[in-house]
Length: 498
Image 1: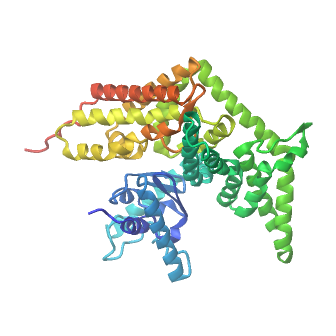
Image 2 (image 1 turned 135 degrees about the vertical axis):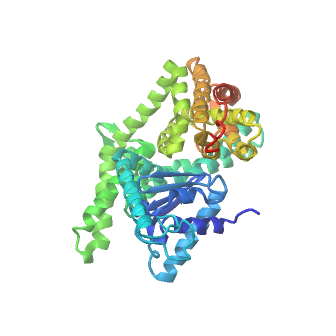
Image 3 (image 1 turned 90 degrees about the horizontal axis):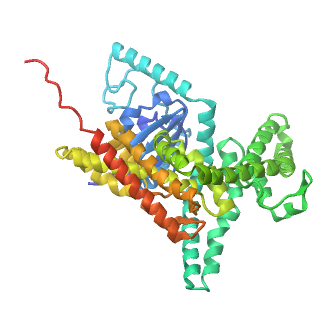
């Protein structure tokens, strides 16, 4: 019988330290992302063992639980409902989990404490030592760079559903225009598809302030300056600004500055004047800085990103594709792939599509090929073959976590050969870019077969789709062959004793 979202959520909550230990909850296409006050209170191994969980990524004070597409939405909603119920019952965010190393009470469920159900002084001491080591590793892993990437991802991940929906509608509208069908409907589709992209800077500003501890609406208000038509009357560095200059990068910088200005004001403005002065000073200071500095600077950076992407593919196409396609699976495994969203979004704003996503999508093709080779090799491993059969449909549609955490990563070598397949597929697509046939995606989110409706290029969607399909087939083939040749399966267990 299929496990309900509420059952999964209720099983996860005590294993991550209880309601009081959860500081934030969000989800992307496949992962429940939790900010934790003290990650040493979370039992990652017990979380991984919960039915329905495909994998766990622990990064600093964030725990990412891989659940899969569709299911993650309902589990997240159930998880948030449990947190809300705990807060309403206690009047506080919840009851904290016992400190690491404290004995587990009789009758406590397995996995409810740091000692994993063991009792006694020795078990408590070992659990405390284990918690100390985990906390030390978390501190060493929480570098400023990785923390910054994680926060940027938190800004853009909530925008992915709208990016996908609007990208699909834009692709549909383009097909109708090319075919000459429904001419009365295509302008409406264009308006629906383009409305969000025209105002995406406002949403980025809102989320930036929210993630970095400011007032979200103030972040949105300052970021709205970037897209306001009236900026065309403003001159900065001797050049008239243009609406949208700097794009999402300008909005991100503007909202980040607004957040710091707001925090500075909160500590210095008298409480009686805070409601009037803090918002005014925040919007004025950050707004003027955006007009007379940030928009111009972000515009330069955005243009450089577009120029660099085009140069990379037109001069080093196969090499660039090989590197990008080969390294993307490790980024997915670490949860850092979401940090590429601002770059994708900037390219879509500039060129109408991102040339990087089809290259990165080849990693999923290598993964599928490697999984098929493992399936062919391990004919007698019924359990693993069942896992592969259940995970393959998601893998073909570009959702790689089930195959990563269920098949290739635990086996070791197939993960490396999957990366080799992704590198080969990326090199194939990059080779055609070197010839002048660029392949891009009008939205971000899907990959694999699901990306076909969004594929386009400088020479039309038909040729772009053909090149993309060739890359997928190359990734499947190389991933399969590399795995089949090098992976012989697990060695038989060694006999011990007589």
